[in-house]
Length: 267
Image (cartoon, rainbow, N blue to C red; front, side, top):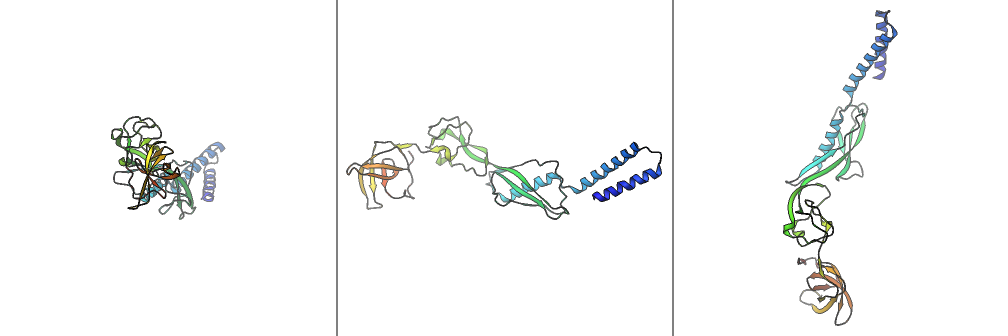
């Protein structure tokens, strides 16, 4: 196309000289430049791929790959592309895929390509993907160490990353905050811990064995412990130090893994 444009311009130059030998060089150069810009503009408009179609293809690809709950909405931010890009127009649908090694996370990139044009191309398009969802949030500002109650919670719509999972209300009540929380913030599992259920020096019942065959004895707690945690204890009869699981207030199951069927009783 560039060679054809040069030939056309030279021919035009020759015609102008033949028709008007009295035209000065400056006028001739101006007409030639004007024609060159017109031809280049027309060629560019006909042959380049609109950048907005690339961004739309990237967003549509993401929407087709994410399943949401009924009460959720998807929010996709596609970064603006460099307006200086001049990519050949694609005669067929753009091909979009996740590049090798990339995952469908809140911050990712997709590859948009055209393999059918005279000048094939591919481009990486960065995106930010979030979802609008329901979560339990703090009714008011809450300090570190605060023990959550029903009055502290309200359900709100929040904007969250794809990787974020918010706990159910039942997993919040009775938990203690490990950090301050601002009013309206969505509560996250990593911010919570069970309150101290036993303190060092307290007496507990030690239970050895399972089912009907059990031996019970009195012990002393050697460390602070939360419900469901492993705790060190001392058998007051033998003086031996043992380890067990705090399965309910005042009771430690000795040895083995925590009973999977045990439902921790909330304080």
